[in-house]
Image 1 (cartoon, rainbow over the protein chains, first blue to last red):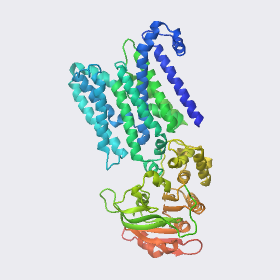
Image 2: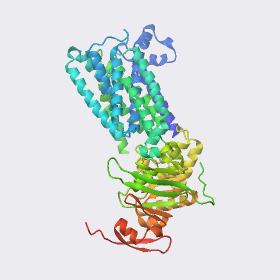
Image 3: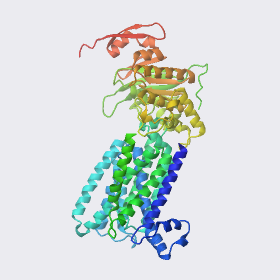
Image 4: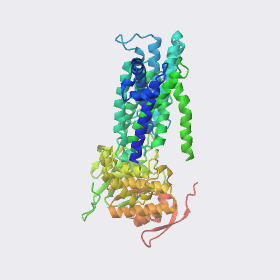
Length: 333
Length: 273
């Protein structure tokens, strides 16, 4: 069993490298796949121009796609486990709607770049996400206990309330409407180097929190009450996991907009392939989420080039049939 | 860590309820000043009609609920002052309908019993060995690599008992361990519990429904009624036709040959329906 898990992680890593190579190869200038692969070992095989294209243009975007995909997938995985709900996804916590409101405000009000450099959109989006998450958490809390049903319900309630505010803003947006919509469907094209670093730091911190709690997350599979009698401090675990997942989501959404579906599906597919043991599942979900978004983004920017498809639509368009196939195969067994 | 206590001296108090009261939400008091004591090494059956707070009593004693007033005492210490980790080292709990959401294997589920004794992240070879021994004792070793979602109710119940044993606690609590099992599995589980209780000198407290099974296997019975303990003693003392009429509203003939009293239910005297 253990070797199967490690083998699966190795395969996921291989898939990730392959996706990165494909993403580096395709684009308005085609660089042969073979030279990209050889470039992993020795940079000398690439021409000067190819190096500039790969390292200055494509690699930052690949890195962002990896970070965002990994953060969303990991966050979905953690939330599904802690809430014991297969329908939980990173956006259930209200982060997405909060981020949406923050971003829409920044766009419609034409908030100037902060400190003269950093665009205000991701900053306000992140602030909105954290505020919404806090609201959901405190609405759901009863006497220092966080009942899971309350949490899901208040997530939906806060989400719809903020969603209504966003709709008002959009009707008032006028000529900025296009930018708001573009942000909402998710894109990896317009972000800045700073947001790559932000996503990676939250991914690292949040991922560590989840991974170190793998054992407790496994025990949570037995139900909250049973997990308590097995020695898990369930309330503390919920707080840690929800905070870690929400912050990762907030970072991902503020950097790349709302990329849906991935955070729901990649954990499911990873789990049905490798099983529910979190020490293996969490790294697998991280790698697969990253690889999936790299591939989806490559498709989004090359399919109808020079136009770019919204990557959030591509994830759902390709992900849904694949998800269906995995579930169907599983149901037949 | 020790499971072999016992010894010659007078049995120690394992669990003590000191005038426990509890109500769900703003509802009426379901337990009202209940006091009881469970001594080390006993096999206590908790009986009562539906809604008399048997499961509530068990949950209060396991520290899963906080009483409105009164105290649940675990080996001399107020359970409210203990951490989940400390409680899990003393007391294992098997819920009524175990539900495992994720498709873990039985071996993984039983190993989770070692969570509190391990680093919390990785199970040592010793932990896995103990899990294996507990599976052997509960005759679930042949299920080890099956996924829990494929098991029958009786098999799952046995796996959950194995998990609780892997905690290596002195006290084992079970909430209606046999309620949704057919009769042969019910017997199987009760025999298993009685055997484990003897061999490991466990203290067992179980909410039970079947009066005859309770009489046959338990060393002591508690009947809860009206928010408190209605009767407390050996099966022969507790299971009298008078008690059964007053608590369960049934007429019963009791014969006391063999191991424990046998109960023959005759007819209901619930005429007011």
